[in-house]
Amino acid sequence: MKRKLLRFLGILVAFILLIVGFHNLFLSNTSASSDIVTIKLSGWGASSVEQKLLKQLLQDFELEHPSIKVKYEVINDQYMDVIKTRLIGEAAPDIFYLDALEAPFLMSQNVLEPLNKYINTEFDLDDFEETLLNSFKDENQIYGLPKDYSTLALFYNKQAFSKKDLVNPPVTWEELRTYSQKLTEDSNKDGRIDRYGFGEILELARQTYKIKAFNGQIVDRNGYATFASSEALQGLQLAVEQYQKDRTSAQKTDVGTNSGSEMFAQGKVAMVIEGNWTIPYLKETFPNLEFGTAEVPTINDKKGTMVFTVAYVMNQKAEHKPEAWELISYLTGKQGMEKWTQTGFALPTRKSVAEKLDYKEDNLRSAFLAGINYATPWQIGKYPTLIINNFENQFTSAILGQQPLKQAMQKAQIEANRQIKVMEY
Image (tube, rainbow, N blue to C red; front, side):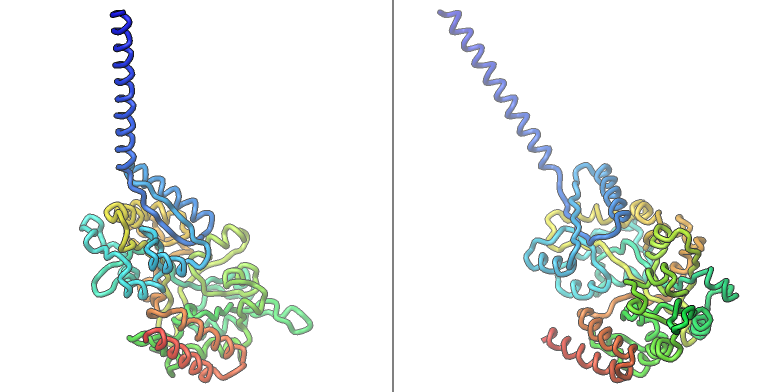
């Protein structure tokens, strides 16, 4: 009997020790998992190549930072509307893409975390292109770090040029119009034009450098539209005259395409002014097309182009801000940016990375890098949609000859400013 009791007690002790062991193991695993912080990153949909590259970059980050996991979310439709709604509802991601065009409004709403206190000398802030960094500054606070950029440059069809004995791309806008006349071809008996000399894009983002060439402005310092000024009209008149008088330019709808890149790729136009993103598109989709790039021709003896950029920004209500900064600093640091831009689909915002990748010696990309020194940032106040929609609706009407340019722009300016006042008050 005594022997049975001792055996029972031994089994009971062993059982208790087993339970205690499992309990300690559970606590250990729980403690280990609780040390891992998850950061949510949101961006818009992009090409499959870009998506693959970013996912690889995030995997590399996680390997170097085992205590941080990144949950990457793609928002395919109505990106900014979704972000703004989530910011209001306090459900926004920790980090998200922010286009320079949308930055002024969000910077004014106290929803972004200022990054100044996280940035140290080792991060080398001076390495960024100043024009790009300034797009995400407000009252000396830095709210975003630009991840990449593109300026605009002239694309020209080398075969079409050779056919017309044109050797070099046009340097001035007057030369561009002369070239366009030579390059425009009517190969049909019914008078239809087979190929236009130049592809005109009516978007405000592609007309701004013309306005700037005559010292015109899109908005004043208070954010109200000023694109109907006499200076602005001088720049816009260039597009109207070439389209209506010369008849050597075409817009995308004239030739049944969806973009300037497509117009050019399909041979509908011999020249077009587009962004760096056009290079991989042409190489991958139209590998036999012989083309070159050059800086945008000067207008009124002035160099001009546009620059488009996107930054990583931090939600002011992010739960794990130090870890969120670790991710931003990795993605925009020298190593991360080199990985991100080494394929050439985007240009690095750090000068040292551009130099290391030798982009200034790249025959196709050097024009884009040169443009950063005089480019106008694509940023037009806190209510860009109101400015853009009113401008483009009326400018299209003027290009088509439905009303005089001055009348169209005055209508657009008055209506845009009326809508802005409603938003302000």
